[in-house]
Figure 1 (tube, rainbow, N blue to C red):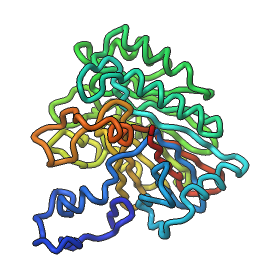
Figure 2 (figure 1 turned 90 degrees about the vertical axis):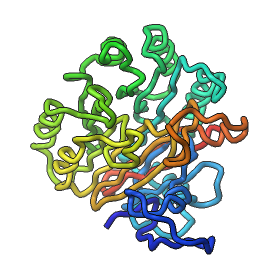
Figure 3 (figure 1 turned 60 degrees about the vertical axis):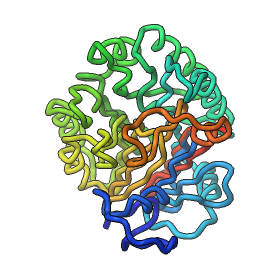
Figure 4 (figure 1 turned 90 degrees about the horizontal axis):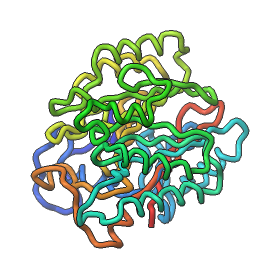
Length: 348
């Protein structure tokens, strides 16, 4: 079964009373896709609690968007996260994405300021995250100055470690060489790597090089994943980071990875797999069997909802709405749990 944002099935009807719309490539109407996708949110905190992945927009009452794991009820999103955080051996980390340092345009005239606010929000979560992951498009034009700026800004994060994966904006003109000089120490190939902590195995992938339209991993990286996973027990929780989604969110706009199914096949034997991506500048959750996909929002500027514009170009919105669109994600995992708990927070 496939579920989107906690909703299992779509029959082509909605409560508007309007005639059914044709289904999209996701098997749901475009109106349903828009309504259930939870497009706006914040930096992201993920925590495992009670074997469920829970997603909540900060400032909301209860859970506004349960993650697609069969979670039910609207109480306990924040409470479950706090309970997991209080447990011994809890892993808590934060995802930020798409800061686009160097962007200049009316969609956000101060991307450095909004990213600074995201750093402040991470530092004000009430706990020290084990690490922070930036899931790509750190910069807008991949210049040395922009990489230096974002690196300096992230040095202000109160965390033990900062990890990154590159976005396509971090690879402009040089196939990612400037990115790797700034952030690629200890990585393999074009910047991929893996690590283990708190009983969880993490894999950071690069799918923003060799782009035609969709993301692309390539045989060398897929071989790395195959060898990396070979010695792991099937009950090891696995978390995969990439910039472009590893599922077909909206291929028309390049929001997919052409050879991702080869990696997904390698992940099928694991009981708990969470894939976290950026790129799309909006929150989205999808579950396929044992694998849950979470798309993060941005700290820079919103992009349109799929199909609502000719192309994914920066959206100019009122200042209040812009704050609601930007944010971070925190993630937690408690030893003995089977899933990650996810919490999205607005920058407002």
